[in-house]
Image 1 (cartoon, rainbow, N blue to C red):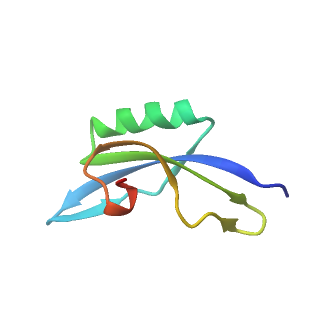
Image 2: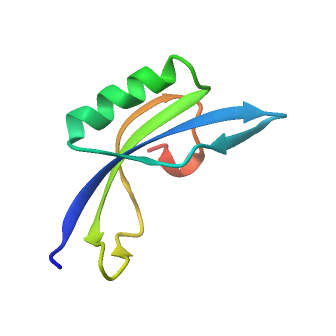
Length: 80
């Protein structure tokens, strides 16, 4: 399969001083991922929309995600 870009959104909840991530959810577009992150940020400690490119069949994706938007508290890997 060809290389493709996936757009994802992930919410985070703070418990006892540690951030716990929800499973990432796929979105259809960059704009949809950004909107979803804003909505999640209203109910979670934080949320991030990001993209990753690669070959899903091979499980070969870029090491670093491209951060599209950060809302609230998220792990340092998503801070730029």
